[in-house]
Length: 349
Ligand code: NCD
Ligand code: ZN
Image (tube, rainbow, N blue to C red):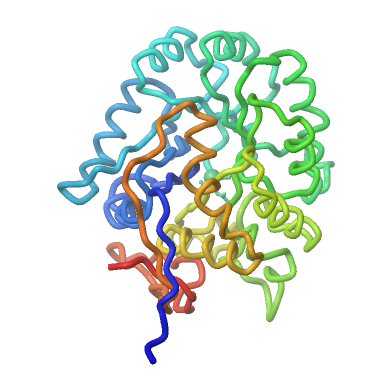
């Protein structure tokens, strides 16, 4: 008797938070995002951040040029906010659909955030405009005060920055990116607001901070926000298995060259694009939540961003998939999340 292959077909997902980088890295890695996702929010934190419409249009073109010729993939571009951002640029960019939102990086919170925002009040005038024109604000939600313990920076950000911000701009649409703590989950759930949502990465669902220090320090599990305690990992899993509409897929795939990961000052970021969707499906299966897999991957995001739900579908099959070990780029290599490991799910060819 032939064993039935377990399959799942869902509306083609979107990745609401991905770093595609530029130049030779972009050319080698964008295909992975294009294979699994119909649309993706492209993070603007390049070495020269995407701070205006011109830079964004030209970056968007480079992304499309890096994809397979007949791609139907749609990059969704984001404006990197600085205290010098021109209000006109934001208004025009959003009206002309060059930007779907703008990103707040607290200054020096993560990769290429030195042009970010020191005091949120520096951009209150921009946030007022965004609230009026209904332009979503994407937030890297961590305090940067070195006196705050790094494991508490997300919770403190909610308390010190996000709550006052939302009081001031109650109708500003906010996405708290890559949430990692039970505090963030509870805050979003309890707010139960059409103005607040969160994205969740596969690695924060799969792992906790013990994994980063098992058998020696594991630089490839270093990302920001850091992996947290197990109780937080469980809170993230409970959030997705509850089917809450306030959470959706954002892989935070963030490649760095090996030599920059393994360094005295190693870069933060996990490159999961080759496996992110396969990781998510494994997690949803493990926690018995497959019935909410499609809404997390393909519905909650567009509903929040007020975009149409995709028409295409994708089929995943329960068949082992080996994750590639590395990607060569000139004399450098990029090593993916779970390199060389096997996952239970693959994409139907
Ligand atoms: C991201 C990167 O490298 O651009 N790194 C990361 O650890 N997630 C930036 C970010 O999203 O914080
Ligand atoms: Zn990111």
